[in-house]
Image (cartoon, rainbow, N blue to C red; front, side, top):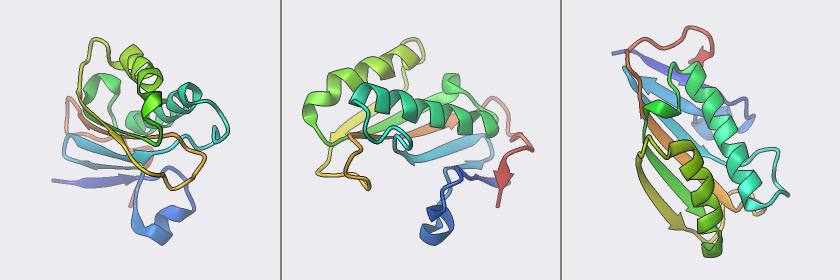
Length: 134
């Protein structure tokens, strides 16, 4: 079974040793994704930014939100759960992946109020040739 790593373009990927997403066969794991570029935004905007980033890498890996089977949501403020949950629900209303929401003390960037991981199972084992690295 082939393995493809997909970069998110972060300069920290080679230093830390991670990929934005990894595809093995038809399973795609999207790493914890923060709201890069929306650091000072409200939590709803941060959540939408995360899903923009995730959608882009899922596309390069040959999948879409329809293929997502699990999400893990990390919040730094418990009161944010409804705003984040509403955005999650807009995207996954009919898809209904298994989902977990956790409250943590802090994320890597202290301005981030939310970080999300996703797992998807694509229809085929063929990753897109564009965008794979590693």
